[in-house]
Amino acid sequence: MKLNSKWHGIIDYAVVLFLLLAPLSLSLPSLTTFFTLTLALIHLGLTATTNFEMGVVKIIPLKIHGWIELVVSVSLIGLAFYLGTVEGSLARNFYLTFGAAVFVTWFVTDYTSAPEKN
Image (cartoon, rainbow, N blue to C red; front, side):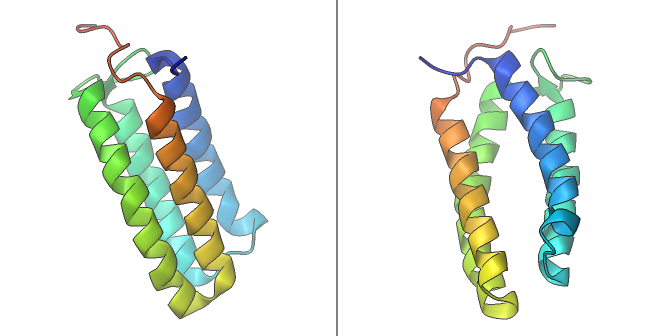
C-alpha cells in the first residue's frame, strides 16, 4: 500500500518542523545548521506550492514534487559526506539518515493520488 498525497503532505510539514528544531535540539555544527535551516525553508516552499490537498498555492504538480524529492534524497547523501569531512560524524550521520528517510518517503508515496485540479 502506498502513501497517499494527503498523508505525504502531512509528513512534509512535519519534516519542516523537524528541520527547524533539529539544529538546536541535536547541537548541529554551524554549517550543518545553515544547510538544515535552508532546507527547511525550501521544503516549506515546495510543499506549500504543490498542487495537492496540503498545498496553499497549488502551482507545482505532485509528480514534479516527487521528482524533486528523489533528487534531493540522493543529493543529501552527497551532502552528508561533504559535511562529515568538514564538520564530523554528527553532521554526516544526520544527513545520511535524513537522506535515507526522504528516499523511503519518496519510494512509498503514490504521486498520482492528488486531484488533478483544485
